[in-house]
Image 1: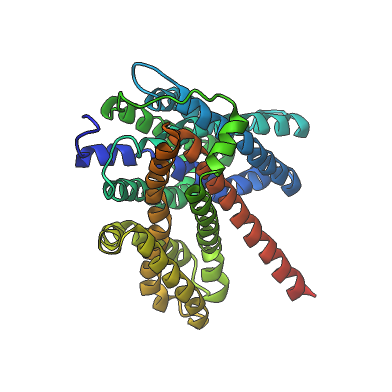
Image 2 (image 1 turned 90 degrees about the vertical axis):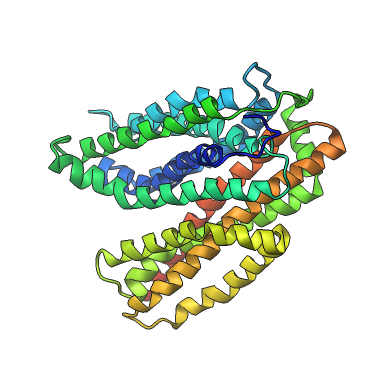
Length: 403
């Protein structure tokens, strides 16, 4: 396939599989890693919080650096695909090791082990995710085409999130022991880590094999990461997009992270029903991707984003109108909420190629890796901030309720 051709459906699907990596890495860390390290491994919550904080500090250095390298790499296979392929094996191996507790390790050595594995996994993920996101601006030159590509990407993200949220903990704590694959929960989590880790290695290989990069891209000569940072943020459209992307993603994640608690404690959904309704929200985001495509084709990216934002503002207060025990009435609302969530993360991603085209007109260089590196960092930061806000809010509510 050449970039002059429009991507086939198979090309879009294979490109979209890359978001399976983001879904597994993000969902397991948001939902299960904190629980695993505290309740299964036995670390104190403060230590786990420090581990997560160190990861975000490392991201602030790691993500932009990988972006600069991605822009300046020159090989016979292109700039992006070799980095993605290089990340495949470390992704699978390090993800599995994250769910392994070294036997007879002291608390201090356990902390060191988890920090090293966690930071190494962050690096491997960034080496894959930054070139993968940057690739969308290079494999198509059509203004409207990126929205369908990003829609497929987010469809796999939502599918991966749905499967991971519903199956990872069950595999680790129930299925592996029932099937005789593990003797205890610690072994169960390691088996689940290997199963999901091996699946992370598939997308990089498929993308390297199937997709092609343009041969006429001008590689930037600038090698100073600080100057790259200054050049990126001199781009006014990118400043606007990155700010709106960070704020929108943080707000969307706050709702998604707190949704289970809302179902349990406000609507008092019975055990099992909360997982089902949360899955329905993600399923709604997945099945309404064609509606998002139509919306952008009909109204354009900017107007579609404004419409989705307005719908989000109106929809959030409606959650307070459902009575206690009214979990059945929220089913249509979950589908609607899922549509807004899916559109809210799809449309901004489809705007990024336009911003990078603007930068190329200004500088004469293609710096997709640098731009996407900062968006990747903002996405990680937004997810971490969402968890922090939800946990802090829950702590305040519990404290004042007890008082």
